[in-house]
Image (cartoon, rainbow, N blue to C red; front, side, top):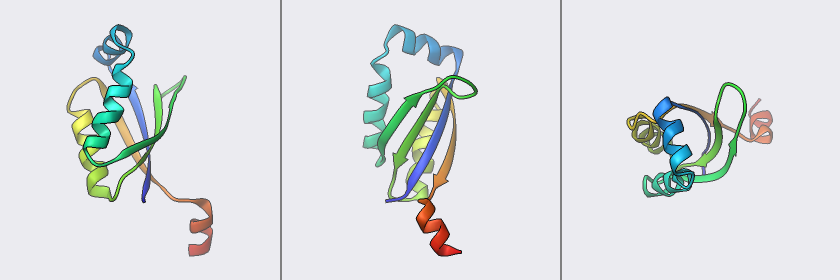
Length: 93
């Protein structure tokens, strides 16, 4: 299944939401599953992004729908990258 890296930054509203309800993070992961994708790994990070997520989705359209749905809420901004195993990349050269 295709893998994507989703980088997210919380907006001030998102910070408030997480501070008041930290479990909201896990709730959003379940909502991602309802949209057809799966959060395989997730980290809270310091620096430019607040979270780094590894997400699997059946195709780019599904991942675009996930990104659009989450982004439309106004609690975070997202940057999504398609990811490929290094061995697959090397084999393609």
